[in-house]
Length: 78
Image (cartoon, rainbow, N blue to C red; front, side, top):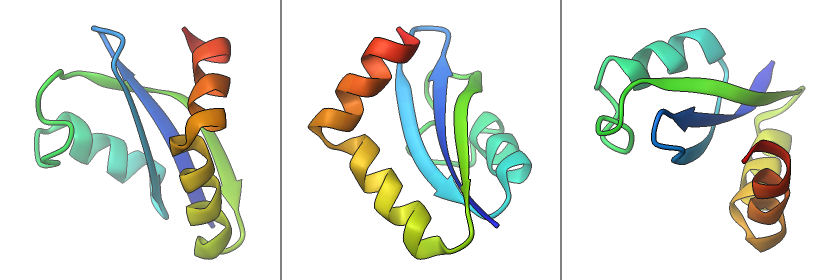
C-alpha cells in the first residue's frame, strides 16, 4: 500500500509527500532527519489517502502540489 499525506506544523505550514510507510515517515519528519521539514517541528498528519500502486500515489501527490490541489487544501484545512 502507498500513501500520500499532508502535514501541518504549529505555524500553519503545509508539506505534501508520499510513502509506503506512513508512521515511519512521520517519525522521520519529526526527528529532524528530513531536510525539507527539519525546521518548523513538530509536524502532524492532517490528511492521508491510500493507493494500490506508487504510480497512483505519485500522480495524486503531483495533483495536490499543483494549483487546484493547493486550493483544495487551503479550503479544506486552513
